[in-house]
Length: 142
Image (cartoon, rainbow, N blue to C red; front, side, top):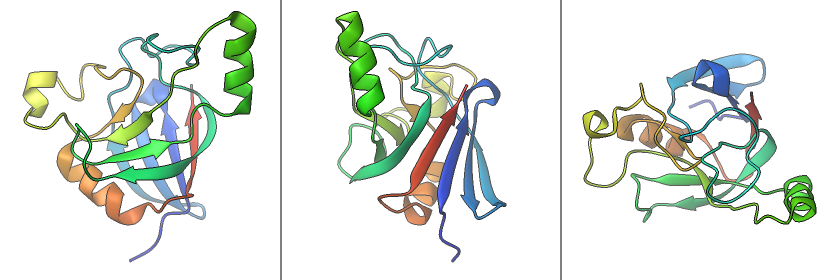
């Protein structure tokens, strides 16, 4: 099995790409935060962050069907929030659907429904879980 060396999320296209070198191994349609335009500024704004991060933790016991934590906020995110007197928030994940909920109940993926996370189906997060290691770079584009 080819190991993924980079995850790219293109928010405007609602897509998540798994890459090995220049090769796109998989493409997934995603749902984002409920207010997805622009970079996440603070806790509760419903935005999905933009920038360069990494997968820094795996949570098999998440309230969602598997979750890979993205290293948001980085130093620049914390500094920006501090300058604005805001809490930058955290716990931004790539995850499946909430436990016990199906895609139709969430309107997934046609509706952006997360609090800033990047959501895929349960079958897709299982595949991503097996292909993406901790430390894998994540690039989130507008």
